[in-house]
Amino acid sequence: MAAKKDIETGNSNSSEPRNGNGELNAPLIDRKNAAAERKCPNKDDGLCVVLLSTLIAVCGSFEFGSCVGYSSPAQFGMMADLKESYSEFSIFGSILTIGAIIGAITSGRIADWVGRKGAMRIASIICIAGWLAVSLSSAIPLLDFGRFLTGCGIGVISYVVPVYIAEITPKELRGALATANQLFIVVGTLVSFVAGALVSWRTLALIGIAPCLVMLVGLFFIPESPRWLAMVGQNDKFEVALSQLRGANADISQEQIDILESLALLNQLPKVGILDLFNKRNIRFVIVGVGLMVFQQAIGINGYIYYAGQIFVSAGVSPSLGSILYASLQVVLTAFGASLMDKAGRRPLLMISVVGLFLGNLLTGLSFLLKQYHMAPDAVPVLAVTGVLIYIGFFSFGMGPIPWVIMSEIFPLNIKGTGGSLVTLVNWIGSWVISYSFIFLMNWSSYGVFFLYGAFCAVSMIFTIKYVPETKGRTLEEIQASMN
Image (cartoon, helix red, strand yellow):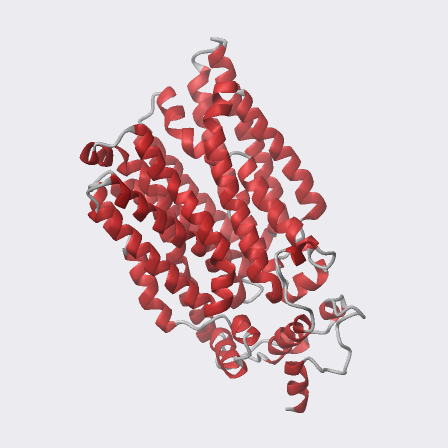
C-alpha cells in the first residue's frame, strides 16, 4: 500500500522515469512489463465491456455522419416547403460547420470538466434540441438555429468519442476499435442518404434523434474513462473502471501503475494553457496532431463531397445513386481498414492511402482536363467516376480515420483537453476553408484544383515519413513518453 500511495502522490523513489526537468522519458518504455504481458484466465467479460462501451460511444459517430449527410437528401424538399432560395439553403448547409467550430473549441474543456461520458451526454442533448428545431421549424431562422445546434453537438462528439475509445481500449485492440469512430460516421452518412430517398426532410430530422437517445440510455451502463478518473483523483473509481474493462480475473496492476506513475509526473508540471502547447516539451505532439488534420483537409475531401454529384451527372449516373454508391464504398473500406489497423500499423496504411489519394486526384483532374480541351470524350466519364471512387476508397481506410486515431493517442492527459480542442478546431476550420474555396478554385481551373490537391498528397507523404510515429501495439503512456 505504501508503494501505491507513493505513486499516487508522485513521490516514487525507485527508478523514476523522468529527467531533471520532470519530462517523460525513455525508461517508462524500457520497463519490463512482465505482469502486463501475463495471460489472465478469463478476459471475456472485460472484452464485452470494452465492446459495449465502444458501441455506445460510436452512436455519437453515427450522429456525426447523420448530421453531415442530412443536407443532401433534404435539400429539394426543404427548399420547396419553406420557399428557400439556393443562397438561403447554402447558409443552412454551411452553418453546421460554424457550430462545429464552436463545439470543437469547447470540447476539450468540457471533457476534462464533466468527464468523457458527461461530454457525450451534453453533446447528445444539444443534438436532440437541434433536430427538434429543424423538424418543427416553419421559418428559416429556426431551421438555421437547429442546424447550428447540431453542429455544436458534433463538434464536441468529434473530439470526445475517439478520446474515450482510446482511453478504455487495450493496446492490442485500440487501432481497430478507434477506427470504429470513422466507420460509424460513414454508416450514419449512408443511412441518411438511403432514408432521405424514402422519407420527408422533417421525418429524416426526427430519425437523427435516434442515435442520441441510444447513447443517452447506454451511457448509464458503461464505465467512465479510467484515465480521466485518475486525472481527477477518483482513485477508487479508477481501479473499479479499469477492472471492469480488463475483466474480473485480469491482472491490472502493471497498467494501473503505469497510468498513475505517468499522471504523477504530469501533475508535477505546471497547468497548460494554449500557448504552452508550443513550448519545447509539447510542440512535437502539436506538430503531429495539427499536421495530420491540416493534410486530411488539404488533400480535398470536402471538395469531392461537394462536387461528387456533378461528377456523377457528367458520367451519366444518377446523383442519388452515385452518392449511395460512394457512401457504401466508404463503409466497406473503412471496415476493411479497421481490420488492418492493429496488424499493418498506422504509418503503412497512411502511406498507402496517400498514394491512392494522389492517383484519385490525378485521374479526376485528367478527366476535367480532357473535357475542357474536348479530347477523348468517351474516356471523360470513366476517368471521373474511377477517380472519385479510388479517392473515396483510399481516403476511407487511411487518411479518413487514422488522424483521429493518432490524435486520441499522442496527447498526455495534462494537455489532452487543450491539445485535442486545438486539433479538432483546426480540422473543422480546414473543412470550412476547403468547402468555401472549392467553387472558386473550380472557376480558376476545373482540372488544376485536383492537381493542387494531388500536390498536397505528395507533401503529406513527406510529413508522414518525417514526423508521424507508429503507435501500433503500444500503451498510451509508452507512445507519449517516446515522443517526448
